[in-house]
Image (cartoon, rainbow, N blue to C red; front, side, top):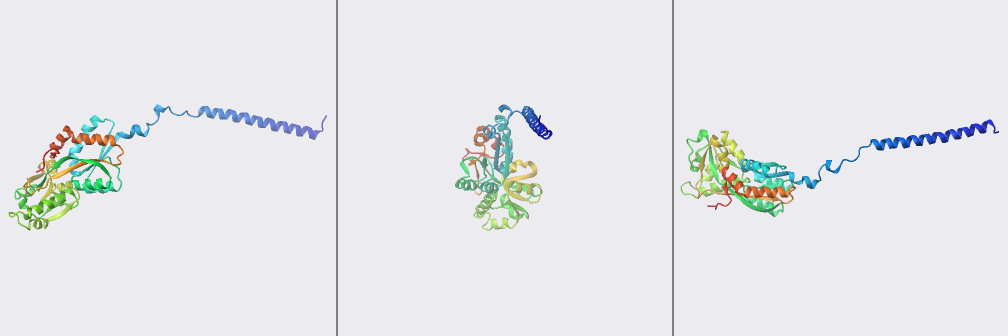
Length: 294
């Protein structure tokens, strides 16, 4: 028979091993319960689609301000053919859009109001193979308050408040070319451009700003595209510029080189150059791409 101290040591060891065994059993049971409670991974079908399955659902179009009405109307036709696609527009002066693209802005399509800015992006490898899709004709617009006294381009020097596009804006450059041609006309005089520019109170960054200034009566006259004048309806009077003095605008369109949604971009170009697209542009005041330039 052992001593009392030995019995106590044996009892302590038994108690230690029993406690350890009990703790292990509790841990195993708890771990099993946690595994049972943990949610199983979602089935593949319930997870978000892979990136390539979602890639062609968003189209971003950078377009000259003068295309706002025509392109907005065409977006309904586009969505009917591509119901999962959302179309986002960025309308601004062609020079602004070019600068944004040169700085890496994300876009799928670029439509310009002149070939100059498009050619710069081609040289910078920012767009692919532009195609001509429309022409546009600059016109003189006159505020209603001045419509009774201004009947032709020749009357512009008699006004006090004229607004034009800034020289880097396509419509501003076209206006300069028109005034230069007018200054070679014996009927208008070599100083015609100088006399008109003496009455210019502001130069705007896109054609819609020129239109707004005249429509609101902040300026008496300006030069815009026929498509913009048409969109203003009765807010302004529209005067045709003599063909021998006028400059017809060419509108090119292209897929952006690093477009995130190239299939939708090509589909937009196909629509714009299709019979339906050309009809919509003509209705908005543009000339079809197939029309010979004067």
